Image 1 (cartoon, one colour):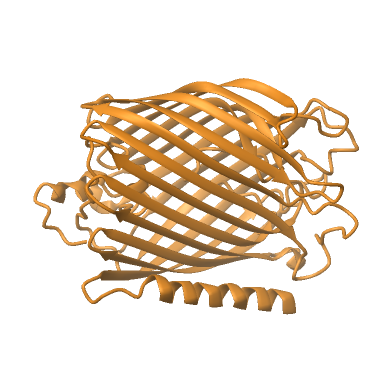
Image 2 (cartoon, one colour):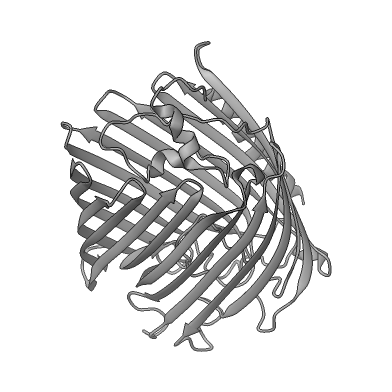
Length: 464
């Protein structure tokens, strides 16, 4: 408990310092904040997926609280958010868990031609209860059992417009997964004589794009480095990717993105070729008033810090948000469905052939009944099956599990989210249906028309 308190206090202190350093702005800066809270009560068919062979059903109660800040000063936007969530189970109080989450994002229009984005996030807590994140389109394989962990990530992107058509970009990303001991007891502690499972991945990329009207052709090169920190010596792997891209704005509401290329994975010291392979990905996006549909599919090699391996496989994912009734009711149904087939590249446990199949789905009915409150009835299901694992490796690499979760949720936010349009910042280039980097920040109230948020762009007079 002492470790839990000291870790929480250190994270909260670091959050306050970061907030103070980030949001000290001149008087001309426009700053805003939002306080949120959530409560979920429900029932799950498997309390700790992957811990034991037999599912452990239980009722649970979750509480969450968060605070977010945002500052806009001229051509600069910065956003910071901290959130703490905790889960208590009815039949097993010892399975209680929590998670601290801190996210930071800054966007800069350095000039009419140069744009910079920087993001960072940190997670600390317990990974045990299965949850499907409806905002994620990729379902990744999970480590077995209850895992206390610290997760860190950072991203950076620089865009440079040569002219009205040509543009170049540079990207960088880091992800770190660090299992830790259980601060609330002995269960789930790391074996001091074994490997902790720490892993990190680093990525750098360069590319360019030529855009005209509804089309854009581009190229990209990425170099990714995955290292697994083991007691017997670190294992590292390089993954090189070269691809071409095509974006096609079919209409004001439809956008399609395609990427195809080749990938090559080699040992960390570049001494041994592991496996070459193709890369193919596609995304179809639809936006129409309050309707949102995203369909994605692909085959690729990708590093996973969760299982400390480079995985190859295929992914299919569908996400949708559909309004219910009249707009003034602000009711909508949202859902996500994803399937991933993956297999590790390289030798693992006597060179066994391992295939991992993971499925996740999420369906919810939402009702925003006031400017500060919304309720949801949600169902989630997840299943993972591994083929080719022996008894020696099933407990070390991945385990089979399935989990059904039913929840009743209540969410709160202050100040109230007014139903008014908010302009998106103009970044140059063609008008896009899917402005991903800005939608993540200027995300309209769920279930509200995205067109409502863009109606004020023409006049440019609406306040944010």
